[in-house]
Length: 63
Image (cartoon, rainbow, N blue to C red; front, side):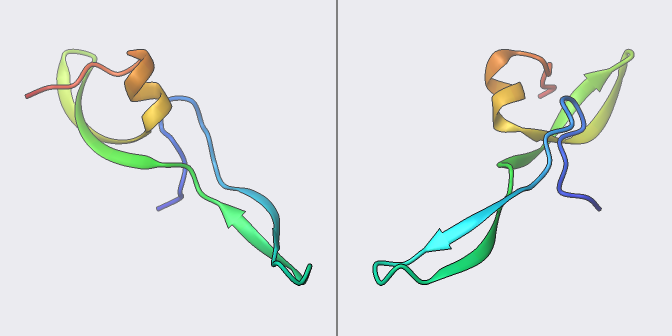
């Protein structure tokens, strides 16, 4: 399963990790994904959603 938000499509981005001695190595910035039960088209589904979509109200959680 891809590390991608099912609402906005946010996926991992790449960057560089720089140590105190300025050694440079590649790294990944993964999105903060949460598995939530959400109502989709009148039904309930489990979605992997980033926390930004949860906070902004793009997803309606189901109890």
